[in-house]
Image 1 (tube, helix red, strand yellow):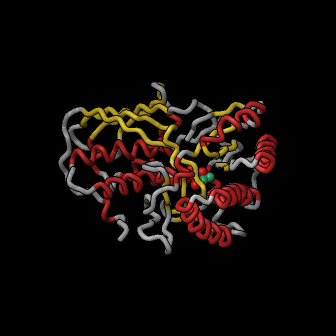
Image 2 (cartoon, rainbow, N blue to C red):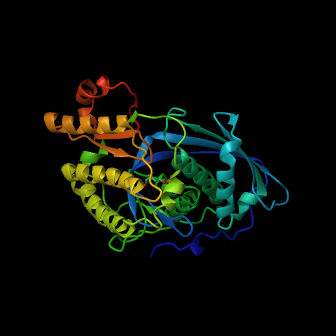
Image 3 (cartoon, rainbow, N blue to C red):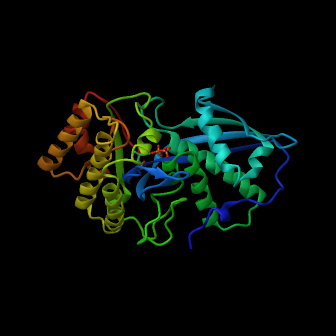
Length: 350
Ligand code: DP6
């Protein structure tokens, strides 16, 4: 039986009363079937499935100083690359507000949080998934110090549960190589509250997959994901999209098990274009793809046809293109594709 919210409420009121320093890291992830639209408190309208990007991590250290008596809101400061970043703090404060019910010991400390991403700064890569996942891991590290008696699955699922309250896709940034978030009636153990690991081994074809990002645009997102998700509430194609994602998750599960790379390509690209189609047909609508995005998509498709290389693309909520391919194709792709681009590329993201 999946865990419920109640299972995650922490009841112990003992906690370490000395100064603590905890470091944890969490990977980024790229969705193959996209999470788009949410309801209630950070629950997804549809299940999603992602590859874990183990080379692209957020590493976070927290210095915890006991307060003596608990505060009524969490006292903290956030630093990115050793620079204080007040702009990030409202989202983190909201996260602490949402999780304190499940981890009341967070009130007992002042938190000085130092984060660093292994992927380039201001590269247009979202760090909120790996960032909140690393923070959730830190908090669960502390919980484990207080109460080490739960089983490994409890710690994994509660970490994902907490991360989800920071950012939905962060639920999938806890473990790997694949994670599935969102309840699916045909997949046992799945939940809207946290992401789960599949009950099968990833086919070897996908075990050495690469994700290189072509940076068409860097900097701040034009429309936040949260605003984008909200537009799904009244979207004219909402029900069709939800059904499509439920179907694609079943198909993708089968593909990841059997190694059917040609259907993998079909679904991954359809999901990426479907996500952007939702943005382009909502009210108000918006376009995140840039001319460079389309140019890269066209040339990848041409290369796939002409050279018979199993390469495909996916997109997040932005203009940058994630290029997915088996490691063995890297040199060939370098010569016929990457070397000819004028854009900056981040290799070995996965
Ligand atoms: C397009 O997880 O960033 O990347 O829950 O509001 O923080 P919030 O949204 P976020 O949405 C990510 C959407 C996506 C697709 C995906 O990763 O599944």
